[in-house]
Image (cartoon, rainbow, N blue to C red; front, side):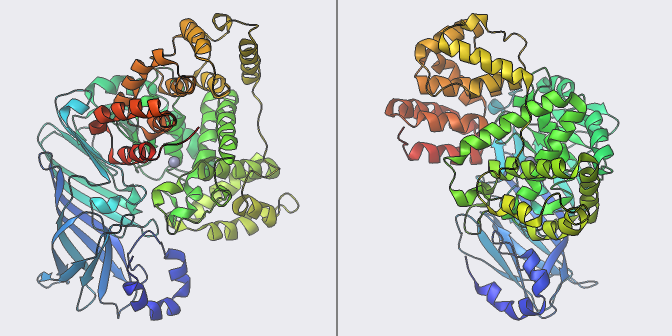
Length: 619
Ligand SMILES: [Zn+2]
């Protein structure tokens, strides 16, 4: 990382120390102290043969330092073909630029030299075939097998691999896009998608609300659409769109529920794009168009908390945004809390409690293997990859702090507070310090004696889970725990378990609580009764295959390999590779599966698996 531009702006830093302190982001080269992007206009051609996006990005600029003569942008593996300045009324002027050496985490700073602050600059560029934020899929890798598919994943710092820009969540901008793609394919973006748009290869988009760069999103493919409500629709490959529309039928109910709690939905439409199974995450809260994995389409709505989560981001994250990635709990902890409130309102308290108990158990399980400094809500990520910031501590411990505040101040007071928080910081990017500065007068001091600032700070700054963390109880889970104990003790046969009516969460609870490892004979008896090898439900299958690897239960291997080849969601497949890598035989098997499955995986999934297979872990 070059320190040159930071030195150049030092005098300004001293003049505007407050603003600079709020916006400095170690995961961006952008000189945001001097200049920020106000709007972006993209003009791009989608080329599936070359696997590239090519065209121009025009950035409208707000200059904060009239003496500044450099614009520094973030890029990763982009080819920059030229830069022009637009000065009001005058002709375009060619500008000089330099691309720094590539940093493995941050990419390459693009330094553009100006002789005067320009109203806008236009950059002609093309993306690389291996762009970290794009996945290019062959027809064979899609459900329909006829057309190619491409989608983006910009969070955390991958927007820079397909657009040259200030790639930091501390800067917000509006955007327009003109995108040309092969006819018969549909282009969708995190903007105003038209469900009736002709498939004519020529698409225009507008996002008129200011968003941070990680919410820039695009997908192109054989994409059909079904409306699910007055302001919601599902986009997916034709063979998937009906089941997706059925699974996500409660979307409008969820939007109304969240509006009742936290104020109006401010983004217009809320659509969902269901991606091919290689999508590396569960969901991505791209504004107006959530991207979602098809692995939550299980037929009984038991995994639609994913939609609750991505919808919740319309308030926590997209509306009130973490200003740097080490403050990610402001996005994910708040969202995980709101998600659970939506699930409770739409599907009942028992369902919401089951989901929280599972998450809390998982977090407790991670205490032993997570270094203490990383158990804080604001860990030190300044020199690490921003992609590593999204731990269960940011999500579950963050949500747990908000649950604790709710318990201590009462639901009525806390709901009113949270609604006020979203209004107060709407369309801003904030730090944990700013969150606390607002919390103190508006909740802690307003209702004195309930929880002190020191107690809140302990949650944020100390490792572990504080003693005042409450956990709900679940009668269903208590019954399942009893049955699991009886089966393990040999006093109840697997076939005699009362499991016919278990929902996904109840199966997850049963499997999560199994001792590690079981005996292969125990798994064989269980499999004969409940046929979990080859289970269609990906959450259940993930846990079963983990148990199978630990027990070296070989009859599961063929179906497990098929599962690992079919799905590219990191959360579902990465733990299987990691567990397999613990023994030489498992490692050899995992390498064989990976060799075949690799072309279907997203670059982010490939990177995680290659890391797991490179260092052989000891049991
Ligand atoms: Zn999230």
